[in-house]
Length: 336
Image (cartoon, rainbow, N blue to C red; front, top):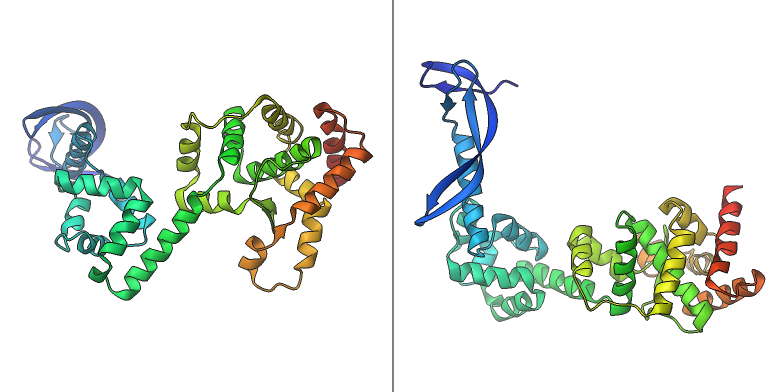
């Protein structure tokens, strides 16, 4: 589709091309540099005024100003509405503002500094929003309040991931950030299993679930669903307090070495050929509720301990390098 606009130099509608240039504009007595779009007439080479491009440049200028002054962005406001299952009008009323306040901000108006500060707190803290929601619940109808309240409960539950599991995830991500959720979930399962094999204790307290695609840790999956992979990974990788001791690192390293070399699909098949997952699914085979079937079936820790102790004896696993004997044999079996 051709780009057409009126060129005041050619005195007629002309095709134009887009190009990007660094510009400096003044906003609130401050010079702001930003990358602007320009519409250039294909016929005469002069710049053409195009309202959509002008609006785009104005939005970019405003967003640059917001970053400089730590004012909440349009994207962050949109994320708040999605995150807490609330409309811009409802949130405006909840905060004691005019019903159209957030709509104006979403359309490009510069947020007041005190409004921005409140929205920043809401964006960063589920607990803070929960207090606001409870305190001002009378400003929403029952349905809107209940919907947002249930979302808050889900968010708070999704935040609860034990520190040791986060530390293991961090190590795995550092070693290979391209691991998919499917692969990561199975690696966590094997870290849990082999840690028990060598210590007779479990590294994670959370029970693993026998989902249709193999063992999963529901807290991780739910957190990904709500916050997205990138945000969860960013938070974990930036947490300097997440550490493992030498033996824990060696366990994780061995699991990555002997299982991380396979695709997520292959590791899934490996776990689905082991007794803990099979027995857990078999016990619940009569379930007709798919959601319950996927996330309600716990793989009892006793099944994991009994199975992997038997694996240790069968394959004569005396050290971490011996894990390869079992992983290779399991791969060969599912490849036949």
